Image (cartoon, rainbow, N blue to C red):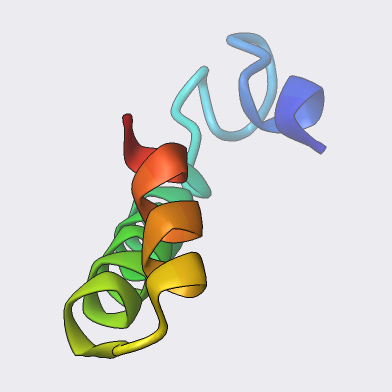
Length: 54
């Protein structure tokens, strides 16, 4: 899919229109993990989420 969208000789001329969608999805996952870290009182879950960030 990405190879088709990034092909400079095709209809998108090398512009990947999925990039914006993928960036927003990644930002949402980071925000969800951060909210989980800040809101949880479970020490084990807090330590687990902190290990994913650092």
